[in-house]
Image (cartoon, rainbow, N blue to C red; front, side, top):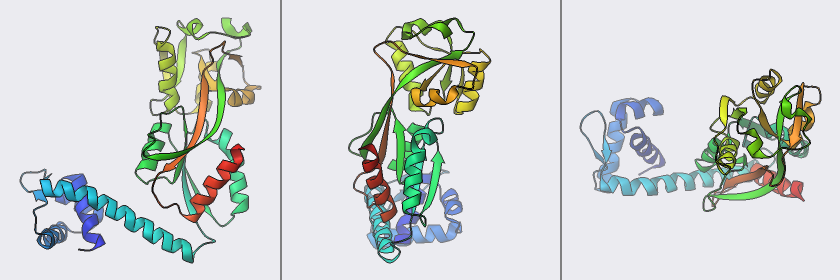
Length: 294
């Protein structure tokens, strides 16, 4: 049994179809079928029920799948660690950041990291917090910046970065624009410009409104901060933004109003997968993030 056979097995288990798995692996279907048959012969078990368009795992196959994934992860950790030893001064890191808030809070940390390690390659992936958590869990991202998201403690290590109050942003001629502060129930009849559903602030805002027995009237949902601001400027609705973002809105035709107590907050945290070998580039980033919060 070799690493390639195990990777082939996982692909077939995921796709539940030899032809689709072969296409993903960029090999011929007969070659894939032969490799899986050889693996079954070596193990002395049948891994798949074959029949129809969709194949299914046998009991032995299901048991093998969990161990196979751990085997691949251990192999990848080993090869990454060996690469680190040889290429210590080089490195790359994949970071997930929410597009609405990521750059605002992360730019200084990224700048410091790049200045300290100019040869490191940084790949930024802009998606919502829910997708970031999934990406880190599946190994597609090394670290992720998430907000207001219940973290699965058994899967992730975390660093709390900051806590920033949310503010209500309205058009300058809106009736609330002259208020010094507002309470969430004051907004129950307002049209909301909300974040898209893969953003944790989407759920956080809805949950907060439900505590006051109303559902926000979402007239639009977006992942683009600038578009949300333009919608507010056109007086098509109100939006909730962190105070640090609101400081950047001075030249827009809007007003940012703080909430009365109890306030809503954006809570930012850095996450990475537990029990996974962290390459040198990732370790350096995590260390710098810890120092950044002190």
